[in-house]
Length: 273
Image (cartoon, rainbow, N blue to C red; front, side, top):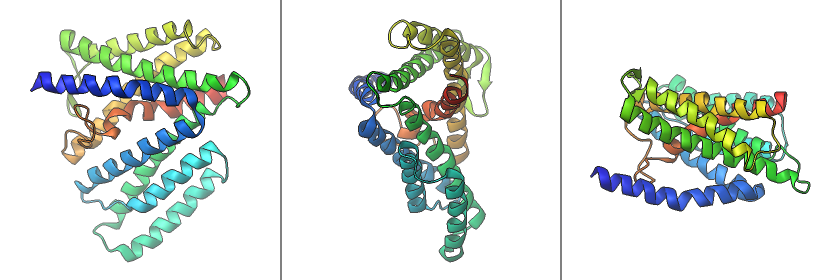
């Protein structure tokens, strides 16, 4: 069974990784569509997790909010702060008529999903569109996205193998019993190393300080994102967010780290680059 599960994971990765890298490089509508699919499916999976705690997430309002946030990041239309105020009013009014268990849980779960998945996913669009579509400048955003993905994949693999072979001290046993401090340290080190190597391949336009900062962000925030998603699943009493991807679980499971990393990278780009 373990071998069969590993074989499924490898096969899906071989099929999916080239597609992810291609749409990241192309950017524009292709990457937007890719992120939109991740966001909508992740929100659906999150809504199902919330049901285990008695919350009836307003799925269609959540979908609409996610679509708006991503479009607004891709092509600025409306101030996000004003939209969120409007969203809060609409959700509260709708809850008056829904009569589905706890209004507090329903509104809270709906907003948590929108903030967590919508704002974080829109940050991926912000990173990809950070450089203007002028000549070779536009590809730089694609190279940064590709590098974040690669660094996260390497970080996850290093954390797994390092933890499996050397792990003795539990990281957060209440949240994820199999993760260890040794694995986390391995993941952090290899996240930084991978960014350093990528500097020589596709990130030559970034300074060394930015490269190291990106590695640190992926190695810390990325792993924290994985723990946060594990916390949500454990609270809901489930192992995976869904069984959509053979051997991998759900979309929310596979993209938790990059969703959590994206807003921090975007903030760095805006205020330190």
